[in-house]
Each structure stands twice: as structure tokens, then as C-alpha cells.
Length: 210
Length: 210
DNA sequence: TAGATTGTTAATCGATTAACAATC
DNA sequence: TAGATTGTTAATCGATTAACAATC
Image (cartoon, rainbow over all chains, first blue to last red; front, side, top):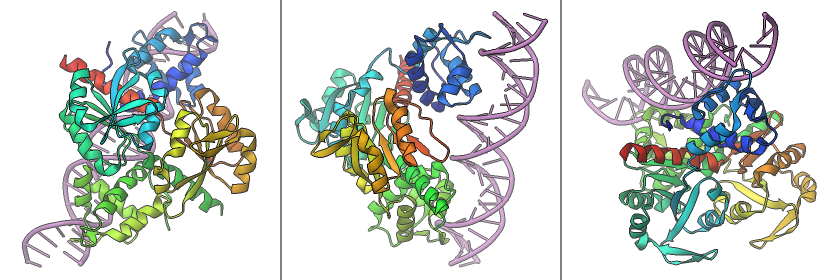
């Protein structure tokens, strides 16, 4: 299982391939060409071929393409969907509760096993634990992934607590830049960044047409 | 107001600068150096200097830095926060309702004025309109931005309806690759992509240490 | 065999970073 | 003046794309 060294950009495209392949699996004859995938997803053909080759150790077969079931298996492996990751969530505000009740994560291999906030409570029928219990629970359940949905101001201090307790990967929804020790990965889901791109595009569109 | 031609990467960093500057405004003497910002946000100094120069037409002053209030004003301009954008949301499932009740967007200049789903209803006290009313409402309110939170399978057809009705920017939370006409921007907030990066990092971490 | 498709090597492109000159 | 900081030009880097050879 050689999974090392997949570039971040390739990695981010993998879910699209998986999505497409699963939904078109039945229609295929067991093989699909990189060209077909590329045109369906509106991507460059060579890029797709390289991406698929990374995922499918055996490689493709000239004139036929790549074996669909191998691809799906390989994609699921790379995406960690074959071994579900347990995670915790910190910050049970609006967004936090939203993500807690969102069913989509399990499908992608993430399982939120506990949620924390300053004070105990419940949300959507799920128990919210006090932050004071966090170190204990992280260790007991051997959690390595955390989702941060606290306000920007408290994000760094929460982050520090998490890394001190052995968290290795952080999915950060707070509008803040987090400093972490070497070896810890922060994946920013920065809504503000996305909005910036959207709104700027719109502005230039409207100015150019007006 | 020359806002054209800011690179996507720069644009995505702007909210971080704004965040930091606003929270540290009172402590400053009216000026801040690119170096100070860079070290606070853990970014490259030259990169920050270039970014700030893009935003602050007047440029910085050697030995002093950039005028903080100009920077904040310029950032807000580029980010569209000085003229709030009205938007609609399509798909009132789990994630959709979550985003509807999320207060954070207004702060960043996005105002969701209506939500749609296949059938009418209410969520968090807000009215959900039937999809059949979508064209009419988009036109009446002159909406240009839409948020898609429908399941992957229906994303493309929703997207088509939106672009046919004049939507110019789409914030897509559905796990699907959308095809749009020229001139329409799709900003993907792909949770699956982020999870892919996280989970892959974790996997290689654990394999290397085990 | 001819043609579709893979795989590889080289060119291009955009973004980041380094080196240095200009300025208050 | 000396030093901090800006601004610019060139080098580097990673990712994408183009060109082409290999193979079923």
C-alpha cells in the first residue's frame, strides 16, 4: 500500500473521481478510460491519467482503460474510507451543532465520537462534554483528529490544548490562522476565504458589464 | 477602485489579514509592518508585503509600515464587505439548515435572503420556498449569488436552473463537479476534499511511526 | 495492421521565495 | 548617518499541460 507522496492537489481531486466512478459503475463494462473521466469532470486528460495511475497500482491497459473496481478500491484506500477515522469536535455553537447533525461525514470516513464546549449540555440529542473532560477522552479513545468550530478568538488556545493531547490533524472552521507544532496538519475550511473569491469575481463581473 | 487581477491565492489570504488587523488595531500606533503581520500569521514576509501593497493603493512607508486604517478599508473593499451581497440557498437538508442558521456569513458580507427546497416548509423559523418559485424570486430580488447544499445527484440540475436564471457565482457544498457556462464562477467548499487531505496525512503519520 | 489509450519526458505557467536596490 | 522597511527583479518550486513514444 504505497500511499505516501500523493500531492495535495491530486488528493483533493480523488473524491470527485470516486463520486463519478461509483455513480457510473453499473453502466461501464468494467473498464473506464482516463479520457472518459476527464471529459465527464471537465479536467485535463493527462492530469486524470496521472491521478488514476497513482491510485491504481496495476496501471491502466492501453485501448481499454483502468479497471473500475480497482480504481474504486484504490480511491477508498487513499481516502481512508476503508478505515473510518474517529474524531472529536470542539465548539458547539451554530456551525458546530450543524456539523454534528450533518450525516455526510460518515460517508467519507469521518466519525465524530464526541463534542465539547465550555459548558456541558446537549445538542440535537447528542451530549456536549465540558472542555475539562477533553484530555481524558482524547486519550481514552485514542483520537487523532479534531474539528474546531469555536469563535476565532479562542481557536488558538483550543488548538494548543488539542495538540498537547496528541491530536495530529485539525480541521479548522474558525476564521483564524493556527500555529501548530511540526508534524500536525491543519486543514482550513475557511468560509471567509471562499466568500472572498466569490464576491471578488462578482464585483469584477458587474463592473465590467456596467 | 482597482480590484481586478488579484490572484486567487492572495484573495484567500485577505480575510486572515483583516481578521488580524481588526483584532490588533487598538494596540498599534496607526501603522503596521508587513514583517509584523507575516510573523503573526506565520507567512512569508515578501508575500505579505505584496499582498498588502495590492490592497493599499497608497503603498507602505519605509521604516513605518502600512497605515492600518487604510489597510482595513482596502481589505473590506476587496472582500466585498462594504457592500453586502444578497444570496439564496438551495437545499434545506442538514447542511443547508445549518448554514441558514449560521450567523457568521453576515459578518463577511453575505446575506442569505431566501432558501429553497423541493417542497415548501420552515426551518429554524425561516420559510423555505418551493423550487418552482426560484426563477421569480431570483429575478425580483436581482440575486447573483447562490449557495448549493443539495445532494450530489441533484447538484448539476439545480446548478443549471440557477445559471439559466442569471446567477453569476455559486458556492457549492455538494460533492459534485459542476459544469457552468463561461463567466459563472463555482467556488467549491468540498468537505470530502479536505477530509481526503486530513486522513491521508494521518495515515502516513501513523504508518511512519508504527 | 491501425487506432485508441496508456505512460513518460519536456515545456509552460502561476505562485512563492530570495536577493537586492530604494527610501524614509 | 544608520537601520528598518518598502518595493522590484530574478530564481525557485510545484502543478499543469503539451508532445511523443510505447503498447495492447
